[in-house]
Image (tube, rainbow, N blue to C red):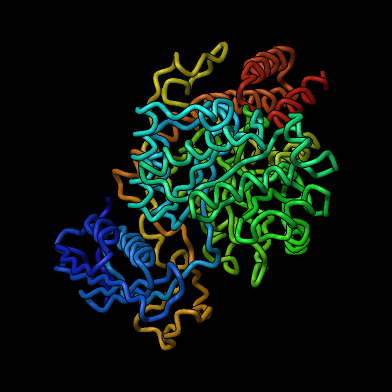
Length: 602
């Protein structure tokens, strides 16, 4: 970490004395790792929970007065989030004079590991839970489609080793103030009217409750829309939507046994119109059950307030958005490394409890997009996708290579053009613009430079990722981006206008700064570890990115009048190498067509 000389009224952090009140253990653990600066002064941090103050859930007030800091949380989660904000503000070991009044806009903010394909590893999940707490996400839903005990073999209890891992996840989630939701997806084979089947389902929930699980969900997605077992058709009927009656009955039985709220995914989980299935749910599902909904379709580019209101009316229940972003299980060769876009911020009074984003099988790479989801859910009105994306890249310690990859993988939804800016440059270069050709060359050279260290020279053909020595470049340092414009709603102590004392006040400071969940700037060591994990995950895509850049450079060279047949041959060979990356889609709809257009000119 690079030390910075404090500006006027700032204080370098030397030793730290923590005065933690009751229920502040997790906040104190965060404060114990506050960054320090050489020659810094002794700092005292007092953190308490004041539920009698009546602040908003998960809210906090943070005041820095010289060498004394006070954090007052509305609840233990608020105190924890206040400590995370202080940790971010002192990322360079310097304590600025600030007052922060902060609280989230949405009650549920998190992720659902609900994708098809290889589930996350136990280490991935533990790392994700720590990441979630740092970014003020409060929910993680365990729902990996390819965990056999979650879906296909739902009747079978978890083996002891697997059960112990679930218990470890519950403990880790609590330390980060993350709600751990355990789900079962029994709909592929369950006979809903069979009491023995119901007992097996309840036994599965009781098994994980014994290791600390307190929140539960039932998933009836991606199954046949109609009842398949004769016993169920006899019990619940054969009219359209009868399967919803069966699902509602199972939900009622689970709630009665567990005496806990429940979340459920209906079979009819996308769209906004009333259907017989939704009519039955509205009539028979307990009113306090949250219903997951994915938008007007399974994967969407935008969601409007009108769609949320219409969908909630059709279900007769409050919704929880299952956002299939940045998931890629419908197109594994692609990575989605851009920000959340197209989600309405007009949610005041909306029948939407919050969001659970469905990530990719690549946990570390998913963090870029998920951090922007955290930003959106924490402060809707101030959310700006481009700003949130830049903060996310900083927060995850993205290397220049990963930033270049993210630029090529930013578009959303999946049907959107992959890189409109690059496409425009290509069109202009083909039209004879020297300036566009120069800009295009810069882009392609950056892509080549993003290659892993052992892949910076051209290869005759792409190699498998596990055959390459994976060496990771140093993370780009962007220390000091806080607190100017990227932190919570705060004001410098010397500013003439004070932060409103009412914690429910939604005022913003006159300087235009904004609240953000994505405030946590990791230490240099944490950045390096994060960068290493991320580059390991995306190494095959970095190799493909470099080869695609080489193909682009070869095409540019072939455009020159003096290139001749040799230049076109080189471009054709480079294109073949780039297109050999069948498992990695890097600008496949942009660069190869450009190379072919050059070759077609003959």
